[in-house]
Every structure is written in structure tokens, then in C-alpha cells.
Image (cartoon, one colour):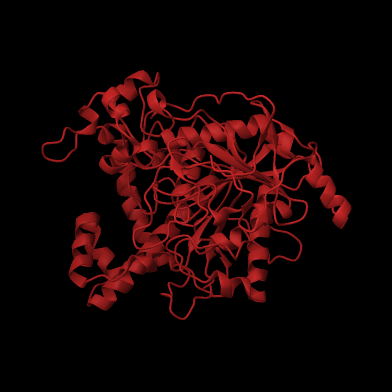
Length: 534
């Protein structure tokens, strides 16, 4: 693990002496006493940029999943003696660098190195004592199940900690390390299941929170999981799992849920274990597990593909469209939504390509779908593909809110319409996928997450942008605290009632998906449910 004395322009210092020095020098309030005692040993943290906020970086929550533990369920971390300095982020999980773009988890100058030894978490807290019981916000990063890290600067928890939450970010195994099914893994699991190692990592980190977060001033009985894109899908998957009772109280999904970003049946373990490979190369599921575990990380990353979140038979015992439709999901409050221009990053579409794609996917509903999203020209097909992407995701988030409300829980549905500022030479994707993240974390200076190409410099210099970030982050922290995003000075956010309700507009553009257009997705989902019940 790399240790540095200066990181992101912040002096890395640890121990009670530093906190005391801050109080003496600046008249600042003290923070939770250190060293902090966890079940594995004592920790000392470091100062965040904001006065009174401490951060504990690179805290192991499970043993390194290497060697015989590759693809294994996370195992207990070894205890240590003395005080462990938690002043440097741990290694990120193995993942590719950005291809023609920046992957903020690994491509920045101070990004941690990648390794299979990556099961680390980070805690931000401004609690003054261990007895405060602040709400806990547990971030699950996105990145198509193949990239991301809890150390990425966009998910810095400092501002949310300053607003009263204890923030936890963590790493989960990615790609073929985090989503790999194999008959031997299935047989040895004890549950006849494999393929959701990343979800097991997430649950292990949440169990660490239950055991240890009170020592940081957090309330283990008031944990909110929140995530974006693939992280939003994992969050919803955990809500739908029968194995997560008691691990969290509320959930936020930003642009994603159990079906992913589109309406579809979930992939099954049986499908993930189907032999597939290149000519002359044995399919991985037919190779002995010992041979696969003997391969290097680089070879695994190069030759295997992760299936993403699947119906594994244990953590996710059935397609979660059935789970949610029949009210078997966890009884937790939710805040869910998506963005106005989700699909603008997808690029141009030809009329022929769009028409063929629609016919292949929609079958006997294709003609009706093309009336809603026509392809009379290449330009019209491009527009239709982008509007359809945003509408389909908005429909999924509305369905999530609706089914949770029907379950008897509080639900809040939003539509993020704000178009952030873009530099003159940048491709203006408007309110595209991931643009809400800097506002949620109230961290406008952070490097943007793909595909967001907006300007940190212009946003952080704007009083209006800063005000929106305060508003959005306040909604999120309020929801984590009480299950209600509303608070003094904030525009009122009504409780979700039913599918006829309009979403809360978060932004300055009054635009919402047309309910008549969204009705086509009800028909597709009904077909999927019918097929699952057969």
C-alpha cells in the first residue's frame, strides 16, 4: 500500500495530537476521539480539508481475495496490533484504464494502484463523540460492473460529513473477479450459487458497518445505501435480496435498478455457466478452478468476462421483477430517479440500425414502439434512441418507487433536469448519465465520471451551481437521516403516491417523460413477467 505525506493538496496527518492542535489553533470543535477501536484493531485517521472532518482511508473489511480466495466469498480480515494508520487509500480492484477517456479510479496522477488485494473501505465523519449516532450513507459506485473505486475523488464524503452524515465508500471486485460463475464454485458454495462475488463484498462491507460504525459516531440502525448506474442496480438488488435484512434501513438508486438501465429479464447463473470461448481455447467454465486460480490477474482480466449481477439462486434467488411485483423485497424507504438526457452519450444512430434493433428486441410490439420512437431519418433515429434511453430508465425508476410504495414504504421519485456548465471545447451532453453525482456529493471541483464531460472549474466558480449542490446534497442527507428529503428552506418534495404522479424536478428545466410514451414499457414488462411465471 502506497503511503504519501501529501495527497490532493491535503496534509496527511494522524492522531489525537493533530485534532487537538486544530482546536487550539483555530478554535474548532473536536472530533471523535482517536484511536478508533474496530473489531480488527485500532485506527487513526487523517484530517479532511474541512475543519472538524476526519477521514479513515484504506480500512480492510475482508481478507485479500487472492490465491485460493479468488472468487471465494469474502473472509474475515486478520487482526492487527498497535494503531493502524488509515491515512492512505487502499489499492483499487483490478480494472481497465480508460480507453480514449479518463477512468477516474485509476487514470489520475494520485490514483491508487490496482490489485486483487482491494477489499478496503473509507469513512468520513464529523462526529464529536462515539455516542452521536449520526445517519450513515454507504456509497456503491457505478461503472458498468467493470470499473470504479471508493477512492475516486468524485465520491469524497467530506461535504456530506460536514452536513451531518457519516459516509462510507468501499471497493468491490469488478468484471471477471466480481461476477464469475463456475460449476465448481457453485458446488462448493454451500448454497448451490456463484457469480455475485461483488454483492458478497458489498454485504461484507455493510456487516463491517453494523459492527464498527458506532465507533465513528454513526448509527448502525440508520444506514442508507446509495449508488449510481451499476451501483444503483446493486443497491436495488440488495433491496430485493432475502439475505440483507438488518443491513440497511433506506436505499437510494440514481439511474439504475435491478434490471439495470433497460427493461429486461435478469441473467441467470445457468446462463452464466454456459460454455463460451474462443476457437481453440477451452471455455473458462470447463477449465478446472485450480487452473483458473493459477493464472495471473492480468490474464484473467484479459481473457474472462464478468456477467454482471445475476440470479445466482442464493443472494438473488429469483428474477427480481418477480420479487418486487409480489412484494417480497426488503421493507425499506427509497429515493430513486434519473436524468433528463441519460442517453446523449450513446452517439448517433442510423434509421436502419434503429429499426432493426427495435424489431429484434420488441417483436410484436415493434410497430407500436416505432410510432412512439420513429426512425424516418438518421437524425430522427438518433433523437428517438436518446429519448427512448432516458424514458426507459425513467420508467424503471418510477416502477421501483411504485412497487416500494405498494409495499407500504415511503418512496420519492426525482427527475434531474439541470444542465451543468461545459467548457467551450467540450461535447455538451446536457443532463446526461452521471451528471448528478457532483451535486449529490456537493463536490463540484471533482473530476467528472464518464460520460459526464461538464466542467468542474466552471461549476465550482458559479454561485448558482454551488446553491444547487447544497440543495441536492441536503435532500440526500435529510432522507438518510429521517426517510424524508424535505427540510427548512428546500422546495417541497411530495411523497410518491402512484404511477400517475409526476417526479420531483431537480433542476431548472421543466421537462418530464410523457406518461403516454412510458406506457409502452408497461407492455414489455408484462411480457417479461409472464415469461418468468411460466
